[in-house]
Length: 176
Image (cartoon, rainbow, N blue to C red; front, side, top):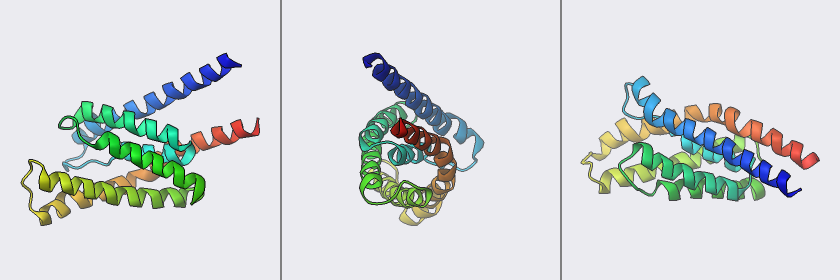
């Protein structure tokens, strides 16, 4: 019994590690070379919200925290608040998916909309109070709007890749 629990937990850790590391590498290495635009979609945010929809809030929070640390290590300007942001997004999505809205695609889009708006606010704060000297109208037109649009457009694909297989597996485990 204990071995079965440990092997399921290890398989789950391996699966999430593989998913999030591949998304982080795609977001930081592959997409900047493919897009001519300096802004890329936030794939990690989409996946953290999808895990929050399919799993519980603790799993989504831990996935968000670890993915934020790895994302900071792989492609940003050092340590920032992104681990805390992704952890809160995953945890809050898990809680709301359990208590408030159903675990379905329209609810996922609502969670993504709210997460993208808060992500735009975080990016705006980093632009205005960070080292970048960017006028507000250029920040909205060239950074915030494309980031919001690209992330919302990529979110259905990440829902299909991450949340649907996890939701089917969780339903199968609940039946047993």
